[in-house]
Length: 131
Image (cartoon, rainbow, N blue to C red; front, top):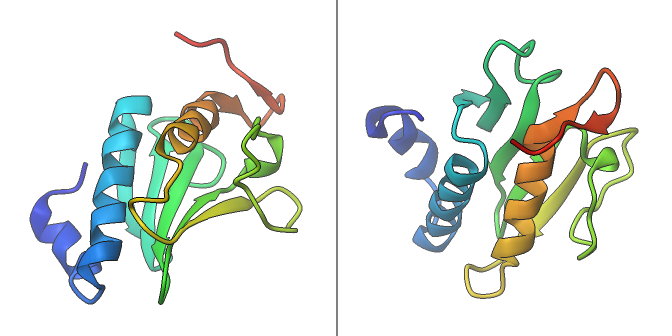
C-alpha cells in the first residue's frame, strides 16, 4: 500500500466523511486482496494484481472521490456476482458502486465484490478458485 505521504495529497482536498470511507475501503482491499498493488492513477486509487498485466487487465478495483460520495469501480464489474445489486453502469464491462455514507455502506457486500474481482480472470472471463 502507498505510504501516507503519497496518500495524503489524494485525500486532503476532500471532506473527512469521504476520507473515512476511502480508508475503510482500503482496509477491505488489503483484507480481500493482500497482494494488490496500489497506485494513484486517473484521479483515484487503482488496485491491481502484480505481474498480471497492469491496472486494466489485472485490475481489481478503483476508488474515486466525487463531490458527495465515493465511487468504487470495477473494470470487469459486469462479470462479477452482485447479489445485493450494488453495481451500476452501462459500459461494456465496467461497473461501480456509490457509497454516500459510512453508516449506510454495505461493507460485507463490497468486500465480497472486491474478493471476487481479485479472483477474476479477464482472459477466460471466469473467477479463479478461491485460495
